[in-house]
Image (cartoon, rainbow, N blue to C red; front, side):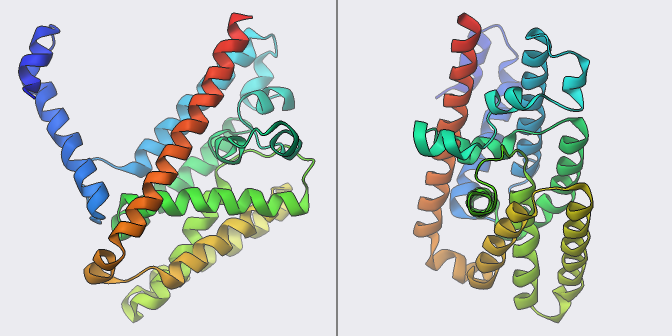
Length: 269
């Protein structure tokens, strides 16, 4: 397709948008190949943008519903549930399975969002550049699922939000993966161990969901122990990982579409 002509017809700068489309095409081809480096585009950065956008949408809805300025730092629990929080009774009895994913993109205030996004900004690109965006997204999604599964056995009646389960998955993965890489990567392993210890202690102090943290970390550690090292290992299991990445992507997009469509229905009432 002639992208330049297409965008020119829309009255846009065809040359500029043609280069952007070509860059996105290169990114997605690299994504499915499992390349560890996809250039200037970053899935980690995209996840940060997505979390911020969804948080902003929650705040706007909260203000419009009369919750007041406290929504920014301490959203009402009903607003959190409306915005995608995990609440197991709704999952089990109302089949709202999408909450098992959307909760990881919902945050309980600006400080909560800021802390989690800071960790994702620091740790995410490191892991993404090491294993590639496809495997990174598999890890991020599976850690979110195991984190909320752990929460089901620990506190099934408590609404839960936040990306910390996925973030602990990244940290747990880094600990075992970099241990396997060799002595040259042990400084990174030790750094991640310190991160995990600090975060668990901090979670106890502030009353965070350490059950989810533990569930995410275990998932990440297991993947880190078995993910093939090197280019040959990646190519041997390319089909399996591409399939898992595709399932993770479809499940995430479907969950977010269901969440947002619920907002639109609510607004229309």
